[in-house]
Length: 495
Image 1: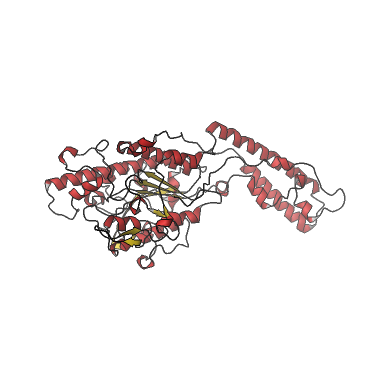
Image 2: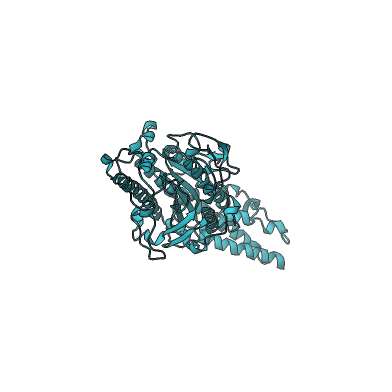
């Protein structure tokens, strides 16, 4: 139910050489003003045409784009095993985040703890529904319906991923991609949606696509395979170089026959032509990933969750590397998810009455409980192992991003931030303080990397989203969601 149109990047462009029919300069006398700005075949050589001969502006400038991924997992965390015990750059990595404590990732790991989801705190209703609909919108839900488990509803405004996407996408680019892993399996309502278009509500809810086959077609259907892409790109560059050579020859033939103002214009065009000629070279070619292969039934099988997630992460990393999009979401299941992890996460499953995620969270107790009983301790241990597994998935995604090199020698990971979110802080309590946000990546220095900042529940997740928008380049975003919960950007984690 995405509101976006497909925006596939297409390699290759119409061949400018087809315009080279004849040379139509005035045979005698001073050439007219428009003739000065015309090249072969009467083709007007203004700035738009010249710029169209090269790769996108960002590549020419040598500045890679900033990118954002929001990764979701359900049922909160176990705060005592998630929150670092020390702050600053040398913070001790807690057990749940241990998979991120590697030489590659540790310098990019930032934990902004002590943030409240204040809009959810002030909204009575079903905890998971309130949290899921407030999580990325920063405001209380709408279309409210009472149930025996508390009021439920839909997100009441645009989500932060969609706002940022609307600000940073280049023309013709896919603004964002929403990928899921069994996110539409159990529910067909607000529990299954985390992204919303402008205005929010059920009509603007954006479903995460759980099928990697669909995602592949949307992202890469028109991208040639690697060898074809290289050949096509080189052929296009050779054609464009020949056009530049031809045009420069035309301009040289009329130099010296111009007035002062026209000569200045011609000099400016020749300067630009020389600059464009220097830029034309075969750089990094978009590497098309393998097409995922799943059957419909396999997409719904619980034990295929890791394989589906890996396929979605591979697609997302490749899409960022190809600059097909700059904003993505990765949704692992739904609010109050019923995923069973016992085939791929080590835990004392045989000693627990429930092994599905939501039920397991209610066997546990909050981290503030001073004396959990043995069953509660086992449940906390299992929940911690589940969240450590999600940390390992975040690590895998970051490592995939790090495998792609930008044109300036940095990696895609260097210019990306991944934000890990959940709809509640802890499952047993449904609390909305100490939200378990994790940032991995510094967006090319736009964010501080490698620090733990404890905001002691004095700041909100609305402020975090203002921070991310500004880091992505939308510096005019000074508020988001319900304005009463906004203080401003979290300067402590801005670069």
